[in-house]
Image 1 (cartoon, helix red, strand yellow):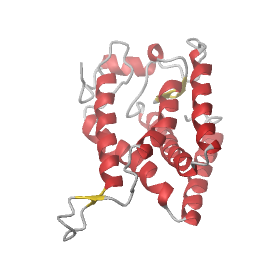
Image 2: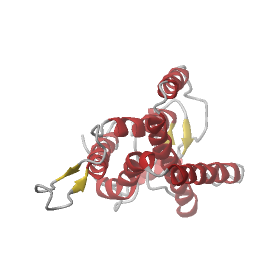
Image 3: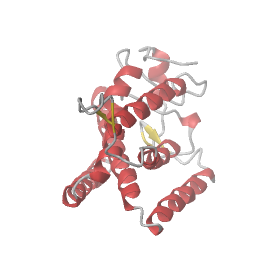
Length: 223
């Protein structure tokens, strides 16, 4: 069953109110297995010197964390975040809107998206025999992946264990697609081909901001 918008119901609000962030009640060994898979994928790419692939993964994963931090802040300020994950759907909740399994998936999502691009990443579609500039394959790839992820999230929002919880009636597939997933995959598809200095600056600023926000906001009980 697909759910395309939040329903604003008391039931949805109660599910969010019951979320136990960073509780180990449901912890199990799949946590370790998933972590081992992530290490294997990244170190395999580093060993092959496929650094652009690693940059793609880190670029998207950093954006993911910035979004999750912002979502948690929204939840702290307004009472309810834009999206949440339920206790029943995961072994460990990192922030109110992201669990361990989901976060690790996003650590691979940028790598997957980048690898799905054509070998010639300068390729453009709809060029009309060179008379029109066309559309970059990186942009098309980002839009395709964003649509796929938004639709899958709508499926998760309709699962019986409430893998995703949308409280607000105005939040759903369309805003998720436009405001969340498109930026995710634009980062993974474009950052690796930046000039080296700009790419380094982007990743350093991105991950420094993530680290500072986590170090400051978690002890304060905001996220």
